[in-house]
Image (tube, rainbow, N blue to C red; front, side):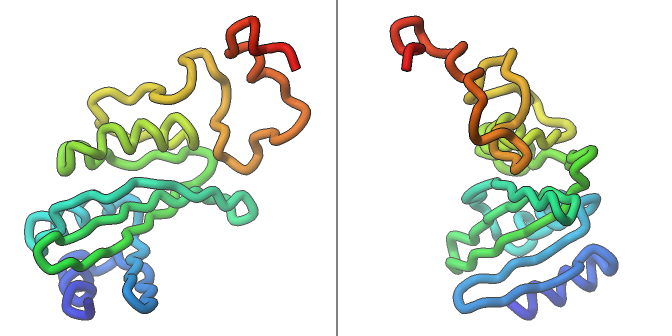
Length: 161
């Protein structure tokens, strides 16, 4: 993995903020503005041809939301996590749906549940919740108790406690 991180440092001098290595796992913390370029490089030149997942983590005390890409090179079995921090006020990042087709659905899920805008996405709309649903239920500020709004989305026979 050291050669990969050196290649990224050489190619994107200011983009790699941190490298976290644990047994069997490497996380590259990158600048959000250059995340897509790094992911494109890793796919095209380093063979990371499989997007395993796109997920998100909300850190309200730190004022950020991390977008996390899990990618794998199926030939070498290398797996890398690429993480980019976004501000809570305007969480947006470029789509990678043009690099990996499966990102289309994965980014829609993250958009729906966390409110991340994937700029350039071909069909960014809710995938799990109704279009008129307000908020993003996986963010930490979303109410966990006392909100019976979900009952509005159930058929009448199921809405009674």
